Figure 1: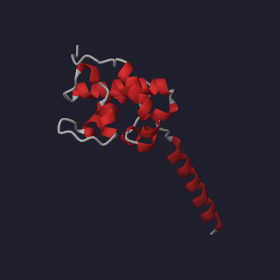
Figure 2 (figure 1 turned 30 degrees about the vertical axis):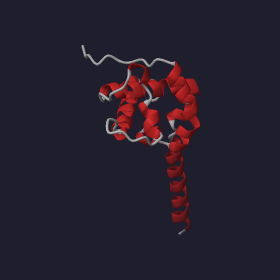
Figure 3 (figure 1 turned 135 degrees about the horizontal axis):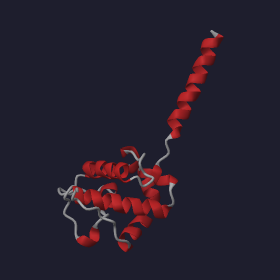
Amino acid sequence: MTSLLKISVALLGVLTLCACHHKNPLTTHTKQDTFKFLLNASANAEKRLHIPTQKDSYGFAYLECMNGKASPDLSCGALYQEMVSFAKEQHTGFEQLSLKDITDSNVFASLAEDYAEYAATHEPHLLSESKS
């Protein structure tokens, strides 16, 4: 019985360590790098999903979705998924980003105000849609 208890405690410890291993990439980079990534990911997702966006407004769809603004032209679920795909494709240090990470309301709350200012003062890098 004692060995079963020891094995159970050891297994629980290992599982706890594994569960805590993933850290949200939006919190492990500098704010500047995180803002740059979010701006580029949102802008490129908007472009890929053909979301009607004015030229100077690329990158703001993420803010709108996370702030709960509803629009018939904006599918937030698709936007988030496309942002995660962008992260995995671009090898920017955000490859491990998950849907849970991108929609974490606590992380968003800590970034929102500064991200809005960053998005208003920086141009996103839009990738070409043409494949050679």
